[in-house]
Length: 284
Image 1 (cartoon, rainbow, N blue to C red):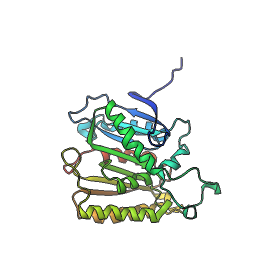
Image 2: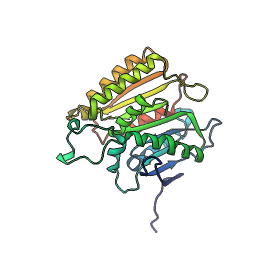
Image 3: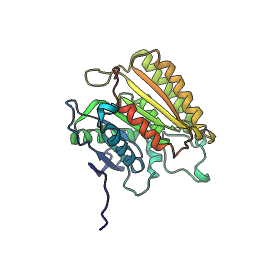
Image 4: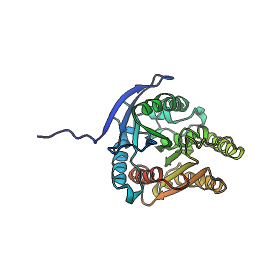
């Protein structure tokens, strides 16, 4: 007799944001291993409807023999929507900054964009609603929190690092849509670097990691897109790497996946992100 298949040790629930009353579906995975004294590391994942299962299997497989892989068992939280769509249109609102209409890039197939510009509300949901709920449900190591986003989700990850750098310790921006609003992003980048240079983002080492880590990735075949995805991603990574090389509180890596396009790159991105987020080094 056929039986439905579910991912082991996973659950989901729906919750609304306090600030905007928007509804989200939260997917959660908890390791079978007992938590270490400081709690589990955690990966928050955007586009949870599409990417949660792949991320869970990657974490389970790579952390199965931690002594060999170095990958720690971790809680995985996918942030999605109460929808059967892999990429719900609500993501356009949640992951984008307000952008004047005359600066918007063309919509898909020339169609108007869905509602846009809700990045501040979505950030508030994660920080004020979601993270406290997760920390009530699971023992979390607050010094090992990571966030991963792809495409517009990658844009959100970069915005979060630049404007709210203490929300997470590890940031993974896959194929980030930097072209969406390049003037806004350029200003945010320079604000972030200026704060670093002035020492305004010193991290409390009693409760959090001693440095922030950023991984930017792209698929080789994405350069053919009019957005110049590879050029933008690589250029930002190179600039931030120059800054990071002069500091001990920031580490930046760039990875380009050969032969991969904007969507086919997702499994490779997730596999690399697991190691980047969950293998500790002496500097973490």
